[in-house]
Length: 113
Image 1 (cartoon, one colour):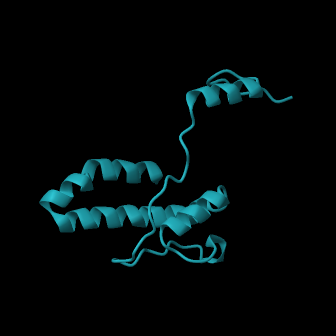
Image 2: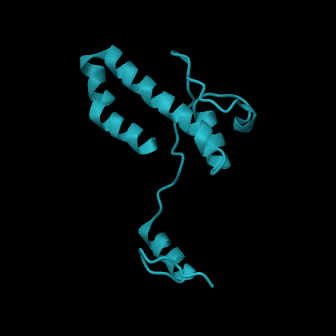
């Protein structure tokens, strides 16, 4: 879902739409926000802290685990907090160091002990 939403944003290019068709740019961003709202729900069991941060970035109050197990679409016109990256980019050097600590090289799965 995240990958598809990213492709959608790239294809629609709201940063260009805003100069040519403001309502289309708004629709594009709303669809992307709806995808993020769905991710908020499905990420929680696997990445609870990231899901909570996403929940807050969507302008939602409270704890994500207290919400119903369905996406709650953002209300048009809702003010959102200042955006921030949900994840930090993993530096190649750090990835190589972690891989070395795990005893595997790129692409190889560690064999079970």
